Image (cartoon, rainbow, N blue to C red):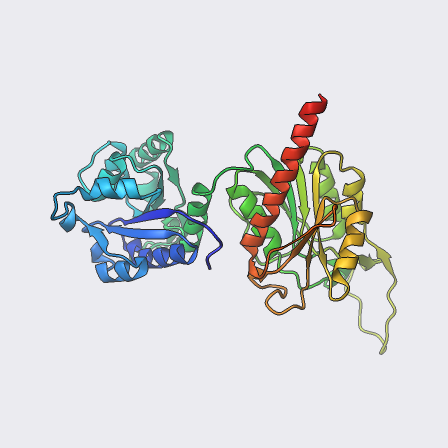
Length: 410
């Protein structure tokens, strides 16, 4: 799924069993919108094939056998100048050692010493090899030179009889997220933002609750996009099945009152808040300590209003940028504009969860950003990450305007 990401990524398959995953990584990078090329060490071709890499990359594979072109051109120089980022996946202990020693005796290390702008290592090896002092010193040296790492992860190891441990290469999807981070301009650097996501649960008893079908994907996309653009991100999340985004402070909550408390505790230090959570409006007036037995054919339950988180933030807003979401099935713009005014928002994102292609749990969304001056910006049906970036573009502009106003009034 292309989310508008751009960049040239050179993927070098090192000589480990995890090279079997490298074609999948290449495919995922292309799906994310990156232009890719592949490089394979001689040992990597014992675990994958040149054909598999070429098909996944959509272009010929660079190998040790074709280091110099027939014209005399040096392949390592060409690749280093072409790539925005080199991903070594899998990275072996031997590959890390050669790079840390500044050697250029294989095509991958030759590309590095030729000055490729950025390097991301995805190690895969036995835990003892990863924890060996020399390996850790090599990692520290490479980090000191500005090179980045993703993984290794804890999980099942490839070698027979080794069981589990920290040495497994990160999954292709995780590596793609790190690639996206390293190739995204940091235009939100220095900002502290809060994002809410997911549903809340309001309990009748320990096992029954009121909730809604929100998956949290829109809020998580907002958190990940802001992280990639350099912001310090706090994600206050209701119950979801989504993994915690790396590089983001995640605060888990269940009830609306908990979400309200956690956001208020952090609100003073925030520059912007985007409330994408689907917060329950009501909660049971009483919550039983034990599961209540089923009795009779009817039951009446008293409900009380939950705190209006957006309204309370609007009252305290000051110079912060405050963004809300309105999920409507009818009279969308009218209701969204009313919510915008009542809750003192800077803009509101209107979407229709029953609209085809924008339902709860999907990867796409279609929103209308409605502003205080009456203007409306439509995203069209795009990925939730693209929606998130469109929202952050507007937030960034509003923050800049207020900073400029503050400087003029100082």
